[in-house]
Length: 116
Image (cartoon, rainbow, N blue to C red; front, side, top):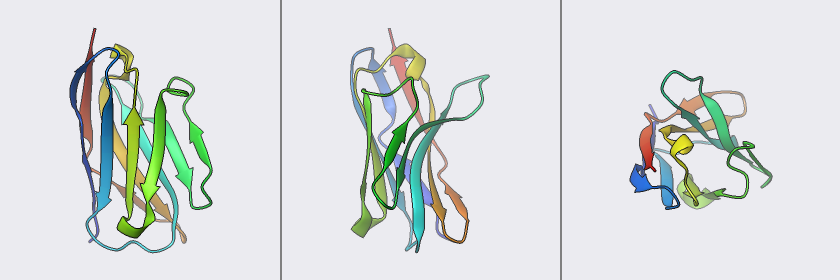
């Protein structure tokens, strides 16, 4: 079964940057959306950024202007460039692919910790 694998998480000071990557372990056809979610301790999982097959993007209000989602279609990879990181960005970040017909692929998550 194809899986998603995230990488690039780690610890950084406030104001720093990280770039997350997400790769599929095999070929996934008809990807409709690629997205990043995050979940902080004691909180619900929330959408960080989403990228449609048509190239449209949408971002959570708390990350607009600081984070950028991008993709490499040939490699079935999605990236999240995170700049000006804040302590409140600390969370486990998950990538998600949704296909047509609908099937959700999730990664195992990567920890991002931002210290003040």
